Length: 109
Image 1: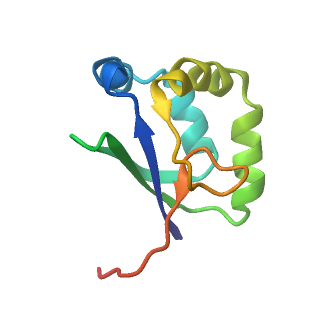
Image 2 (image 1 turned 135 degrees about the vertical axis):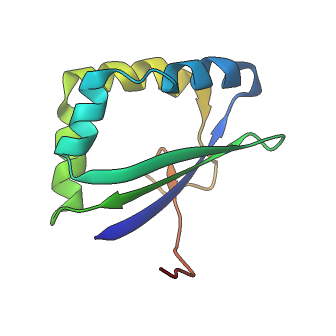
C-alpha cells in the first residue's frame, strides 16, 4: 500500500460549488476510483488560504497504469471537466501535475 498526499488551490468564488459537487459524487466516478485501486480517499479544505489537501491509499501494483486507466475513462473525464475550472493549481507543481504531489515526512500507525 502506498499513501499519497496532494495539494491544489481552489478559486474562492467556487468553494460552495466544489463542496456541493463532492457531497454527491457521481457513482460512476466513485466506482472508477475503486476500480483503480484507490482506497481511503479524502479531500480537506483550508480556508482562508483556499488550499485543498487530498489523501488516499493506493493498493495496486502499477500506479502509473491505474492513473492512465482512470484518465481514459469518459465519465471521469466529464467529472474533471466540471471540477477543473473551479480549481487553481499551484504554480510550483511539477510538469504534468494538476494536483501537486507531496513528500511524506512522517507516518505512524
